[in-house]
Image 1 (tube, one colour):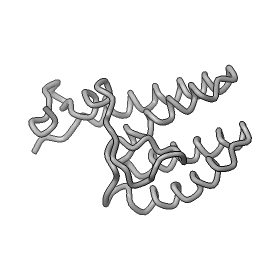
Image 2 (cartoon, helix red, strand yellow; image 1 turned 135 degrees about the vertical axis):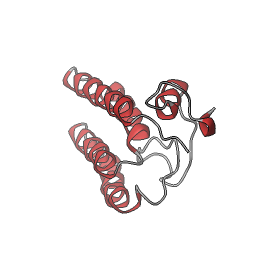
Image 3 (spheres, helix red, strand yellow; image 1 turned 180 degrees about the vertical axis):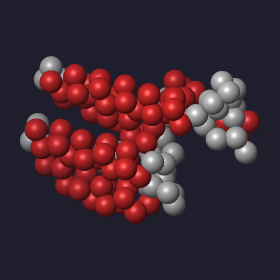
Image 4 (cartoon, one colour; image 1 turned 60 degrees about the vertical axis):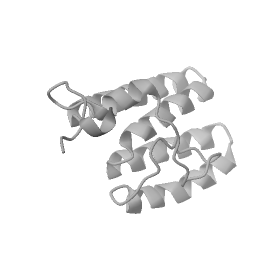
Length: 127
């Protein structure tokens, strides 16, 4: 079965991390978390990228004094390191305020990125 285009996924992931950094630098933690959530959805099957998003969420939580987020992210970092290649709840945003086991709807624009093959066609299982 054809696989999604990893180059396109990496580009979208990088764009979300950059947007998160810009929002955090501008003092907009809510927007920064939003972009990190989107990066999380894109990175769920890539162990290092997945762990990196949780690390960024932990740091952002600490910067705004959200200790629940910090504690939640600490456990998610360990889980991401172990389970990214085995099983992930598709679409889960990765925040501490949602169950780490709950699948969630994937935004349409991210669904397109995750399902497009390198040849520009949609993977049959993602239509």
